[in-house]
Length: 138
Ligand code: CA2
Image (cartoon, rainbow, N blue to C red; front, side):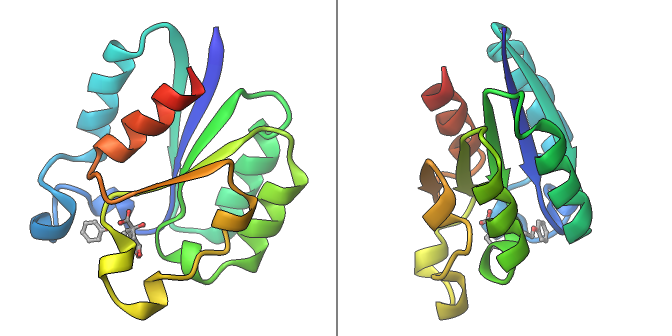
């Protein structure tokens, strides 16, 4: 069975609880339960942290054995050289996802330290962005 990790960055624990006009009203844990059932031919796991170093540790932990990482680094996308370096150092392919269309938002969201080292990027399809990434790994 393929192993895929969904890795979420800062503030994504607030999904479904704040700013529903941008991010929708489903909590990520509810969404995760539905996709675990839907994609039951893969071993899906989920980790969220608001701490940059914890995200990097997780990338190191799974990055040589898993088949894929679906990463929404949230605001660290636009700031973290360290996350970009971590992805560059591992062998597991990473797909960068975003819920909102970052290109229709503020200019500082147009740059990503993840995109150059990602296998691909899926932006702006709501929570479906995660599903599209999983499908591409299958
Ligand atoms: O659209 C995305 O998925 C983002 O990665 C979300 C980040 C943002 O900084 C990126 O530019 C684009 C923000 C995540 C914050 O999530 C919240 C969810 C609910 C309420 C408040 C924040």
